[in-house]
Length: 91
Image (cartoon, rainbow, N blue to C red):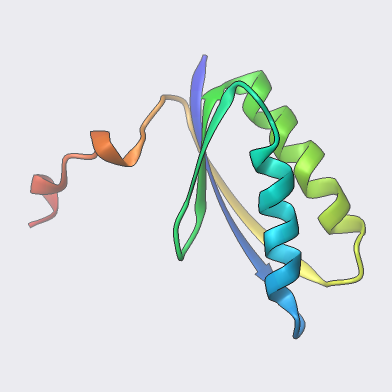
């Protein structure tokens, strides 16, 4: 099953940029997934098992780290990259 996972990380302390960058570096090392990051969130596309493994493996060090963080995650049960969005419906 193809999925789209959207992740937004909110570090709760100063010096948060490095915590976010570390998470994204770990996430982008995984194979068999596609990762797109913008200024608001990160979207991960691929097969459910590969996406969830990449997410949990990448997130765990952040959760165990010194920086307090909050993470908001949304999952869609289809592959929905931004180039497939029909923005005409938004006007």
